[in-house]
Image (tube, rainbow, N blue to C red):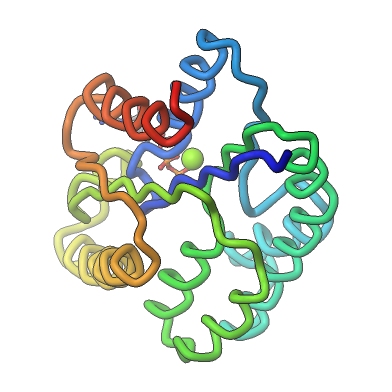
Length: 198
Ligand SMILES: Nc1ncnc2c1ncn2[C@@H]1O[C@H](COP(=O)(O)OP(=O)(O)OP(=O)(O)O)[C@@H](O)[C@H]1O
Ligand SMILES: [Mg+2]
Protein backbone atom coordinates (compact mmCIF):
# COMPACT_ATOMS: atom_id res chain seq x y z
CA UNK A 1 0.00 0.00 0.00
CA UNK A 2 1.26 3.46 -0.85
CA UNK A 3 1.24 6.17 1.82
CA UNK A 4 -0.13 9.68 1.60
CA UNK A 5 1.87 12.75 0.74
CA UNK A 6 0.65 16.02 2.28
CA UNK A 7 2.27 19.36 1.49
CA UNK A 8 1.83 22.75 3.19
CA UNK A 9 2.74 25.86 1.24
CA UNK A 10 2.66 29.61 1.70
CA UNK A 11 4.62 32.82 2.13
CA UNK A 12 7.45 33.14 4.66
CA UNK A 13 5.61 33.99 7.85
CA UNK A 14 2.33 32.37 6.74
CA UNK A 15 2.68 30.02 9.71
CA UNK A 16 3.96 26.89 7.97
CA UNK A 17 6.31 25.74 10.76
CA UNK A 18 3.63 26.42 13.38
CA UNK A 19 0.96 24.50 11.46
CA UNK A 20 3.16 21.58 10.44
CA UNK A 21 4.03 21.06 14.13
CA UNK A 22 0.35 21.22 15.15
CA UNK A 23 -0.64 18.83 12.37
CA UNK A 24 2.02 16.43 13.65
CA UNK A 25 0.47 16.55 17.13
CA UNK A 26 -2.96 15.92 15.62
CA UNK A 27 -1.77 12.91 13.61
CA UNK A 28 0.00 11.59 16.71
CA UNK A 29 -3.16 11.81 18.78
CA UNK A 30 -4.93 9.76 16.12
CA UNK A 31 -2.21 7.10 16.21
CA UNK A 32 -1.16 7.81 12.62
CA UNK A 33 2.48 7.10 11.69
CA UNK A 34 4.00 9.99 9.83
CA UNK A 35 7.19 11.75 8.81
CA UNK A 36 7.48 15.52 9.05
CA UNK A 37 10.01 17.01 6.69
CA UNK A 38 10.82 20.28 4.94
CA UNK A 39 12.43 21.93 1.95
CA UNK A 40 15.08 23.16 1.46
CA UNK A 41 16.39 20.05 3.26
CA UNK A 42 19.35 19.69 5.59
CA UNK A 43 21.30 17.84 2.89
CA UNK A 44 24.43 19.22 1.26
CA UNK A 45 22.39 20.48 -1.70
CA UNK A 46 19.81 22.09 0.63
CA UNK A 47 22.70 23.80 2.42
CA UNK A 48 23.89 25.37 -0.83
CA UNK A 49 20.33 26.62 -1.57
CA UNK A 50 20.10 28.14 1.92
CA UNK A 51 23.49 29.84 1.49
CA UNK A 52 22.21 31.32 -1.79
CA UNK A 53 18.96 32.46 -0.13
CA UNK A 54 20.85 34.25 2.63
CA UNK A 55 23.19 35.71 -0.03
CA UNK A 56 26.17 34.19 1.72
CA UNK A 57 26.90 32.67 -1.68
CA UNK A 58 25.70 34.33 -4.88
CA UNK A 59 24.33 32.56 -7.91
CA UNK A 60 21.88 33.22 -10.76
CA UNK A 61 18.07 32.87 -10.31
CA UNK A 62 18.05 29.92 -12.75
CA UNK A 63 20.88 28.16 -10.91
CA UNK A 64 19.07 28.67 -7.60
CA UNK A 65 15.88 27.07 -8.94
CA UNK A 66 17.88 24.11 -10.29
CA UNK A 67 19.45 23.69 -6.86
CA UNK A 68 15.99 23.53 -5.27
CA UNK A 69 15.06 20.86 -7.83
CA UNK A 70 18.24 18.85 -7.19
CA UNK A 71 17.52 19.06 -3.46
CA UNK A 72 13.95 17.90 -4.14
CA UNK A 73 15.09 14.93 -6.26
CA UNK A 74 17.41 13.85 -3.43
CA UNK A 75 14.71 14.45 -0.81
CA UNK A 76 12.23 12.29 -2.72
CA UNK A 77 14.60 9.38 -3.25
CA UNK A 78 16.24 9.42 0.19
CA UNK A 79 13.26 10.15 2.46
CA UNK A 80 9.84 10.77 0.94
CA UNK A 81 9.53 7.80 -1.44
CA UNK A 82 10.88 5.16 1.02
CA UNK A 83 8.49 6.42 3.71
CA UNK A 84 5.48 6.44 1.38
CA UNK A 85 6.42 2.94 0.19
CA UNK A 86 5.92 1.77 3.79
CA UNK A 87 2.35 3.08 3.64
CA UNK A 88 3.05 6.02 5.95
CA UNK A 89 1.94 9.65 5.83
CA UNK A 90 4.55 12.27 4.87
CA UNK A 91 3.96 15.94 5.77
CA UNK A 92 6.25 18.36 3.97
CA UNK A 93 6.79 22.05 4.86
CA UNK A 94 7.20 23.58 1.35
CA UNK A 95 7.57 21.65 -1.88
CA UNK A 96 7.64 22.31 -5.60
CA UNK A 97 4.94 25.01 -5.43
CA UNK A 98 7.39 27.23 -3.53
CA UNK A 99 9.86 26.87 -6.42
CA UNK A 100 7.10 27.82 -8.85
CA UNK A 101 5.86 30.82 -6.83
CA UNK A 102 9.16 32.29 -5.61
CA UNK A 103 10.95 31.43 -8.86
CA UNK A 104 8.27 33.03 -11.03
CA UNK A 105 8.09 36.11 -8.78
CA UNK A 106 11.87 36.47 -9.09
CA UNK A 107 11.55 36.65 -12.89
CA UNK A 108 12.34 33.06 -13.89
CA UNK A 109 10.34 31.71 -16.85
CA UNK A 110 7.24 29.91 -15.52
CA UNK A 111 7.04 27.32 -18.33
CA UNK A 112 10.61 26.27 -17.64
CA UNK A 113 10.03 26.15 -13.87
CA UNK A 114 6.94 24.04 -14.44
CA UNK A 115 8.71 21.64 -16.81
CA UNK A 116 11.67 21.02 -14.48
CA UNK A 117 9.28 20.35 -11.58
CA UNK A 118 6.67 18.21 -13.24
CA UNK A 119 8.93 15.20 -13.16
CA UNK A 120 8.35 15.10 -9.41
CA UNK A 121 5.49 13.33 -7.65
CA UNK A 122 2.59 15.67 -6.92
CA UNK A 123 1.20 15.65 -3.38
CA UNK A 124 -1.99 13.72 -2.61
CA UNK A 125 -3.15 16.72 -0.61
CA UNK A 126 -1.71 20.22 -1.06
CA UNK A 127 -2.67 23.04 1.31
CA UNK A 128 -1.93 26.73 0.75
CA UNK A 129 -1.94 28.88 3.89
CA UNK A 130 -2.84 32.27 2.45
CA UNK A 131 -2.00 35.51 4.26
CA UNK A 132 -1.74 39.14 3.21
CA UNK A 133 1.82 40.38 2.54
CA UNK A 134 1.55 42.81 5.46
CA UNK A 135 0.66 39.98 7.85
CA UNK A 136 3.51 37.76 6.64
CA UNK A 137 6.05 40.59 6.97
CA UNK A 138 4.91 41.61 10.43
CA UNK A 139 4.91 38.01 11.69
CA UNK A 140 8.53 37.70 10.64
CA UNK A 141 9.25 40.63 12.93
CA UNK A 142 10.67 42.80 10.16
CA UNK A 143 10.58 46.53 10.72
CA UNK A 144 11.89 48.06 7.51
CA UNK A 145 11.70 51.82 6.86
CA UNK A 146 8.54 53.06 5.09
CA UNK A 147 10.07 53.05 1.60
CA UNK A 148 11.66 49.68 2.17
CA UNK A 149 8.38 48.36 3.56
CA UNK A 150 6.56 49.42 0.39
CA UNK A 151 9.10 47.60 -1.83
CA UNK A 152 9.02 44.58 0.44
CA UNK A 153 5.22 44.44 0.25
CA UNK A 154 5.33 44.67 -3.56
CA UNK A 155 7.74 41.72 -3.74
CA UNK A 156 5.81 39.60 -1.26
CA UNK A 157 2.58 40.48 -3.03
CA UNK A 158 3.94 39.08 -6.33
CA UNK A 159 4.76 35.79 -4.59
CA UNK A 160 1.29 35.69 -3.00
CA UNK A 161 -0.42 36.25 -6.38
CA UNK A 162 1.74 33.50 -7.88
CA UNK A 163 0.76 31.11 -5.04
CA UNK A 164 -2.94 31.92 -5.57
CA UNK A 165 -2.87 31.11 -9.28
CA UNK A 166 -0.75 28.00 -8.67
CA UNK A 167 -3.31 26.88 -6.07
CA UNK A 168 -5.98 26.98 -8.79
CA UNK A 169 -3.82 25.22 -11.37
CA UNK A 170 -2.81 22.39 -9.00
CA UNK A 171 -6.01 22.20 -6.93
CA UNK A 172 -4.40 23.13 -3.63
CA UNK A 173 -6.84 23.68 -0.76
CA UNK A 174 -6.68 27.29 0.34
CA UNK A 175 -6.80 28.03 4.06
CA UNK A 176 -7.22 31.54 5.49
CA UNK A 177 -4.01 32.09 7.44
CA UNK A 178 -5.18 35.43 8.82
CA UNK A 179 -7.21 33.57 11.45
CA UNK A 180 -5.82 32.62 14.87
CA UNK A 181 -3.27 29.80 15.11
CA UNK A 182 -5.88 27.43 16.57
CA UNK A 183 -8.53 28.32 13.96
CA UNK A 184 -6.07 27.69 11.12
CA UNK A 185 -5.02 24.44 12.76
CA UNK A 186 -8.63 23.23 13.10
CA UNK A 187 -9.26 23.95 9.43
CA UNK A 188 -6.12 22.04 8.39
CA UNK A 189 -6.96 19.13 10.71
CA UNK A 190 -10.42 18.85 9.23
CA UNK A 191 -9.08 18.86 5.64
CA UNK A 192 -6.53 16.18 6.57
CA UNK A 193 -9.07 14.05 8.51
CA UNK A 194 -11.48 14.15 5.58
CA UNK A 195 -8.69 13.23 3.20
CA UNK A 196 -7.37 10.36 5.37
CA UNK A 197 -10.90 9.22 6.30
CA UNK A 198 -10.11 9.55 10.03
N1 LIG B 1 -2.33 32.36 12.62
C1 LIG B 1 -1.40 33.06 13.27
N2 LIG B 1 -1.72 34.16 13.96
C2 LIG B 1 -0.78 34.90 14.59
N3 LIG B 1 0.53 34.61 14.62
C3 LIG B 1 0.92 33.51 13.95
C4 LIG B 1 -0.02 32.69 13.23
N4 LIG B 1 0.67 31.66 12.66
C5 LIG B 1 1.97 31.85 12.99
N5 LIG B 1 2.12 32.95 13.78
C6 LIG B 1 3.38 33.46 14.31
O1 LIG B 1 4.10 34.03 13.22
C7 LIG B 1 5.50 33.74 13.33
C8 LIG B 1 5.96 33.00 12.07
O2 LIG B 1 5.34 31.70 12.06
P1 LIG B 1 6.07 30.43 11.40
O3 LIG B 1 7.50 30.36 11.85
O4 LIG B 1 5.21 29.25 11.67
O5 LIG B 1 6.01 30.84 9.87
P2 LIG B 1 6.65 30.12 8.63
O6 LIG B 1 5.64 30.23 7.55
O7 LIG B 1 7.15 28.79 8.97
O8 LIG B 1 7.85 31.09 8.31
P3 LIG B 1 9.26 30.75 7.59
O9 LIG B 1 8.96 30.73 6.14
O10 LIG B 1 10.12 31.91 8.01
O11 LIG B 1 9.75 29.42 8.11
C9 LIG B 1 5.68 32.95 14.61
O12 LIG B 1 6.05 33.83 15.63
C10 LIG B 1 4.28 32.38 14.87
O13 LIG B 1 4.02 32.16 16.24
MG1 LIG C 1 9.02 27.89 8.76
